[in-house]
Length: 496
Image 1 (cartoon, rainbow, N blue to C red):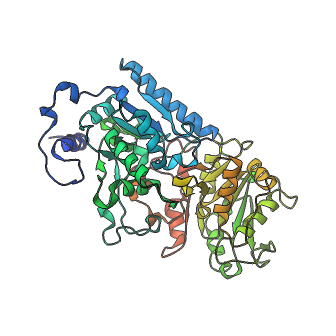
Image 2 (image 1 turned 90 degrees about the vertical axis):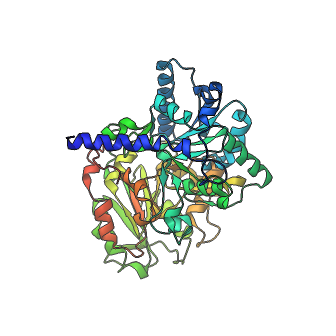
Image 3 (image 1 turned 30 degrees about the vertical axis):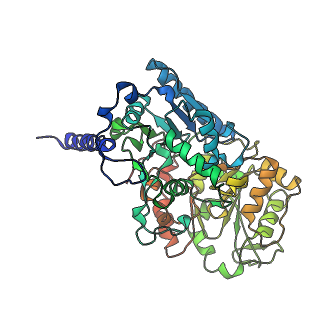
């Protein structure tokens, strides 16, 4: 009889064996469900072989120095693996270096460039995040299974448990029906699909719209209401931590749940600004105090009404129902004034933001406060037509002091008090050529609004909104546990 561990290993191995047959029994054209004959056996050997030089790796890198170094480390690792395999090195691109287009990170505007450069002599475009880890020989074997002449969209599938605001309540009748890739596991497009998408973009330019959850929006664009291919799930593309036993069957893994670069930034080096208003003084502010505020050394509440019992500070900006640009810029000016203690970092949050300050302190150890750092969850507007990126405010916006100095010195200002503060800041940063730095650990929405398996390999820093949830319970479940902040190297959390 097999031991429990042996049984588990047998089950996982059997799972991967069954999935390895998928490319042989699934057609990949516009009809994703029609059966097909096994075509690999009918092709000459020259057509079934895949040289690593036919795979173009695109590392979804960012311009901040920490992220550049992360991407360079991954590039070097891939080249060393190719050398060890005695293979010619593949093309490895760092996304942030390819063009001057701010929208490149949203992928779709980049496809015409990739098609023009690699559309004739390559077979696959493989996208990797900076913390994706690749076993090159296994990935090579995975890609060989697929007829690269067809339109393939490969990845680790995610799906929504319920319709969610971040996906514009798409597929509300059956949210689980639509699958989209977890970028952390890596994802791939056959060059045939890249060329096809490029033709589509050239015929009908990308719309000027919001980019909120890129992985979902890319999948929707490719699927095109059933005219294009759906995502094909590949079980060898994984988000297990690379040291876990189950990762032995994987072609990709993740390096860690959260980056650690040294000693956490001290709490007294982060000034925390909470935006609130009189009508939420008795509702939301008590939640802030009961949950995360007790870990802050320097914190002020900014309101339209001075309430000494909290206390709140009236910045002289009337409350607005939306936008809050006037209030945010008043906070930026106050941060640089003599009214508050001088710190290297500024965190601006809403009164319904839930955040782990110890985890933020650990994350900030990776960033140089002397650089222009604007950090949080990145959204975009109009990226298909130029546009700009911005840090969405609900998940928390983090600024280095130098970034605030440059912003205010530039003359950037609100066009009205109720303008959307995060978007105005994004426009200003874009004009200054200051990069907006994305971290998926910040969240604009509630945990319920994200796929379970997406959150399972994270150590989240923040969530936002109290709607239909118990915010204290959410904080205690997702953000309280300090075992993730005591070094963070030994996270015990695994995929659900």
